[in-house]
Image (cartoon, rainbow, N blue to C red; front, side):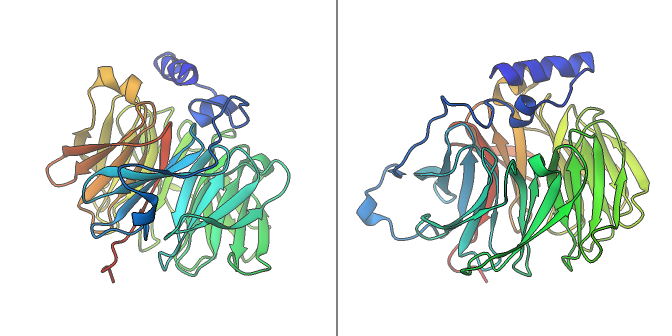
Amino acid sequence: MRAASCLIAALSLGACQYVQTALDYGRGPFDESARNPTQSVYLGMNESSWDSGRFDAGTLLVTNKRGNDLSIVDLATGREIRRVPTCINPHELAVSPDGRHVALGCYGGTTVDILSASTFEKVASIDLGENARPHGIVWHSGNAIFVTAEGRKSIFRITGALSDTPELSEFKTGQEGSHMLAVSPDARTVWTTDLGSKTVTRVNLDDAADVRTVTVGEEPEGISLSPDGTALWVSARGSNQAIKLDPVTMEVRKTLETGRFPLRLAVRPQGDVAVTSNLADGTLSVIDIARGEVIRTIRVSNPNAARERFQVTILWSGDGARIYVAETGNDTVAEVDYSSGTVLRHFKVGDGGDGLAIIAPLDAP
């Protein structure tokens, strides 16, 4: 956790800079000492009893970027019941619209790997080219996969990902460290936060030359589009701000103060609020989207524990009742009740649990 400690120390000095190791929040993507398991581990159950990755209350998937594997957590019991080997340094992941597959951004390499959501075996591996370092990833309702390629200053659109001949389209952002992304409902526009350039970029996929880049806050990283597509929200980790942008003109509409080091932002599926994940003080800032105000602060851990827990990724449950918070330094995920702001449970996962996704229960529509 040396990089983590350096990163938090830099926060208090106001001198945090973009470096590759800081982006990984720990071990670098090509660390030769990284563990690379080759077999699944069944935790508390026999392999013969495993018949599906789905459970009655849904399944939480967690990419373990230092362990190079994927934790599978039964949300009914809160137990990690299986751990599956993956590519080197997996960060973000996305579930297909039909819930049958999971796509991983292999940050330590150049591929997007696709797993079956029932067996978690790899069924496809799509190479994005030299130095790609895939990170932020969205599997759009229209079935295309969108992913940032930090090392190529670009984003990719992948269509027919499960076919014999997937089609890849690359769109240049021209910015250093294009890290996280949001996609419009019609899949014709993508926005990225660019950590190295400290910018936010809008890319028109109908006209690759139509690229708009703006500088907002300090080190924007978190990004989320309102469900109706009318507002783009960004969290600037270096200036402790949440910023509302016009998604077309990229003009700033509102700037709000949040907790310390808000490196993720997620809009609730119902579209009424957004939350930021504030790494340096272990909190979530709750933003009323209509009013444009921070209305609550939810404490996930105390300030003294925040350094150790290293809170990163956040994920809403589909009904908006729960928030899942990856505590990368502690190898845990906190389950928070949104209504009360209470931490209900902590799930133990693999080494460096980061990216989060949920597979709906079997009886979900």
